[in-house]
Length: 454
Image 1 (cartoon, rainbow, N blue to C red):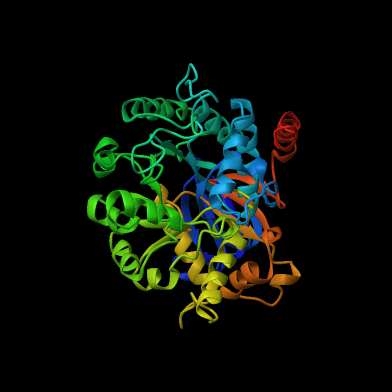
Image 2: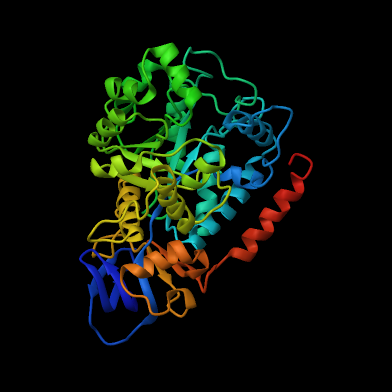
């Protein structure tokens, strides 16, 4: 039994003072009491820790290397994508494991307790599978074992290079599986998780409408009856044009009309929706997986957040390309995108809750739904996914209640995160992951190996 005492805690019923949280050996919260004398480990501000709902871990190693422009007059997501394909051809399983471990350390230090890894880099550069079909999935699992992060592994099904069923293009050979081979890979990936903690889970990810056949998409929930399902949807204007040209409808409209969307689904980006699509998609209970820093970096567009929330839609947050890993900045960027588009302020605020409180509550709930993880609240029976903020920081001085969150997200940064627990595992202490030095050293070796490629 571990006990944590905090001056301030965000509980399901709201802010409470002098709170004692008891965590069982199984990693779940056993008891929560407020207004009790100080005892156990002491903290200033204790919050539920969210899930990072969308990550491509390996892309972290190319962060900062795609900010130039070639001979094209216009640099876009698609030119960035070609650079990414060339980079990933250099990666070995050892590289993937070390990069992913560093990414998970940075996620934990930012305040995330768990991560959904949208993992599509399956095969050798030639496209030939490894002897273990799930070799690279095993490396993601090994990274999670090292870092302690709560892992939701999402092996990605990627079969075609476009809506017309054409073959995979240059740089995509490492992704490809037909449905039969992918089902075998998915089963093998499950086996790679058997030695991880009980809070680990497995989902599945049809990459996008462009990458999987219409027939398979229509029955995806039947092919994979258990676990969360994640998919990129309506990220780019050119994707909208391609789906309309090939299938006769906009991506979101086609998905609404042809797929059984429900709370199992987390649809990533959805930055290219018309208002009617936003309203109808929210009603399905599918979660919108938003990645505002990456969406800004790649010029994807702005999610229709205000209409989505008004229609009771769920949102989760993710770091996607991992160009920058910052929980506070993801939420700040999401809010500011709405302000810039609509020429207003406090877009997500309500008369009851401030902007940061409403956003934080939303991503806690949405991330838990999107990964089928019982988290997002300091409540008995939930995983002890927790983060502590530094109440001695000048940025939080004289703050209370929701303004703790507003000051962290809009006036502070991730340095205010002092401690993080994932399913009761105390992984970040005094702002630093307990294995940071070892994991950082391994990452530096990878960058040295890749120096000519990047």
